[in-house]
Length: 390
Image 1 (tube, rainbow, N blue to C red):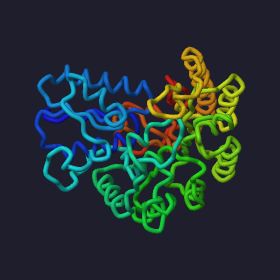
Image 2 (image 1 turned 30 degrees about the horizontal axis):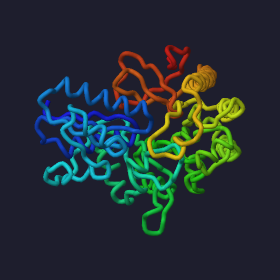
Image 3 (image 1 turned 90 degrees about the vertical axis):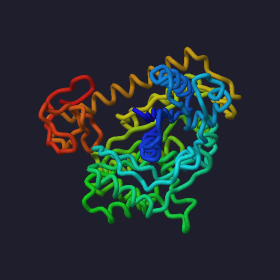
Image 4 (image 1 turned 180 degrees about the horizontal axis):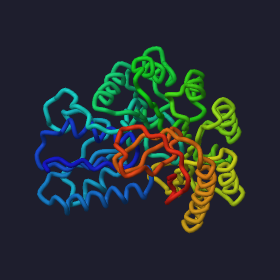
């Protein structure tokens, strides 16, 4: 092996890591750590990945990019295992790696392809370091996105997932300020053979009318919405400088379910945000049932350097940990009820390489031993095994 790219964190990093593999394919004895800094735990995992990579390939050149390479630049540069850092905002520029420009390499064939359409963020959420790591919001133009989707489909992808740091802000920096719904419509119109289009995390307050219509009724847009919710308590949302209220989130989900009852809701939730008391935590817990959240990402709050929230009164770490566990238990209970409701119902499943697949609503399904990756199967589940339908 002459090149290894280790990706941590979000789906956008996964997509960018695929591009890095093509960009650096001719590099010799190189390890790249595409890092994450969204939480203190993510930074710890980045450090761990660096040490593990150096031990596995002691003679390779080891370079670090990604958000932690910006937010934790001095600390990571001081690690003896690290040979250098590449700015996150420049990591897809061959000049940053001292390699000649090359045409985009064919994408490695995957059943599900991640296509990054936006990066950076113009918001000022009080807990977040991503603007420090990614810079301001920048959108990819429609032709570039369509070209990327075409390469993935030519490589055999059956499902495309649009990713971004602040996905629903796509278009705000482009001529005419188009909205994300226009991009989704352009992809669907250009590729009538695309069978599945899925979206990564959405800011519900930014879902435009066209996008809402597509989420509500377009069969090729999957019935699966993951919301960047963060909290179910209004005062905490204000202290986070989020732009939505609890009622906004509830009404959005109600409207989606009125039009598409089978839609599955996911959400990001932060446990133990500074100043959170028991009543606020109770509101966070109750939003899980109110929205019927079945795909939950729970993050214990950890103070990030240079953020306003780090200067607020902190919740005791043991309390944060306990509240995160309660949130995860509530999501698990909601998810179990949902999976039970799917037993006996035919599901369209796209097979993956590990013997499982995902239904349209992103329920994970265990498949028969003869399942072929990238092929469709209709499965009528009869039981739940290890959190999966079977």
